[in-house]
Each structure stands twice: as structure tokens, then as C-alpha cells.
Amino acid sequence: MIYRQYRSGFTLLELLVVLLIIALLAGYVGPKLFGEVDKAKIKSAAAQMKTLGDALDHYRLDLGNYPTTDQGLRGLVIKPDGASSKWQGPYLAKEIPRDPWDHAYVYRKPGTGGKDYDLLSYGADGKEGGSGIDADIAF
Image 1 (spheres, rainbow, N blue to C red):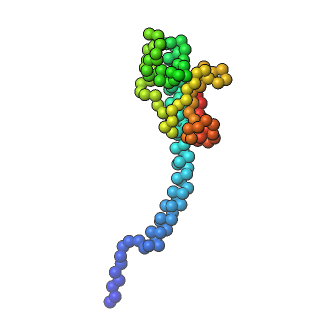
Image 2 (image 1 turned 90 degrees about the vertical axis):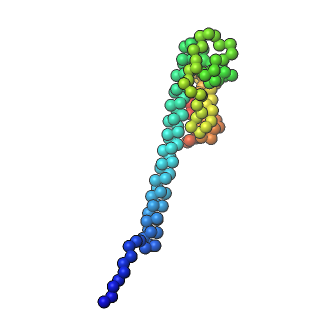
């Protein structure tokens, strides 16, 4: 009688086929997921600027005007020199946030186009202008 010994396990060919399938799936799904990360950062920047805009409005209600460009957003957490006793800050619970790409938000008073102020993020590249994820995000 001949007895065959069967070994359990996978052949090299089977393992290579599975690895090929995994690589194809990663190649298809990976770029879609990274695109969603960029969209989430843009939404996060818009939400942070909304919070900063609300804090700026509270500042204006207390002092009668927005911080100057020189005072910047620091005026929301540290009482500016020469500010009246009406300053009821800090107007933010934490430090001034940086945008999702770790750049400082840009604040200018007066703003362009007749606005009281400009509040924006320069996007992923940190430079004015751009398109896609490098585009400026304004509030």
C-alpha cells in the first residue's frame, strides 16, 4: 500500500495570486481615500474659520470694532495694548488654531470688497492663490 502524505497549506502560486489581488485593491481604494482626507481638511479649515469669525464678532460687540491687522487674532486671547476695560476675553477657549496644513490663518482689517475683515487659509501650499487643495479658503 502506498500512503500519501498531505500537507496543509498554500502553494507559492496561491500566495502570489492573493498578494496580487490585495495590491490591485489597494491601488484602486488608496487614491480615493486620500482624496477624502483632503476634502476633510478643507471642511475642517472652514469650521475653524467659522469659530474664529464668531469670536471676532464677540470681540466687536464688546469693544465696538474688530482687532487691527497688527493686533491680529492674538487680540482674541490676549488683551491688546490700549484696549478698554470692555475687553471681556479671552474669546477663544484654547490657543489660536493653525489650519489643517499647520499654517497660520491670515487676518486683515479692513477686508477686501468692503468687508470688515478678511480671514483665510492659503490651503495646502501655504501660498496665496492656487487651485484644488492649494486653493485659498476664505471666510
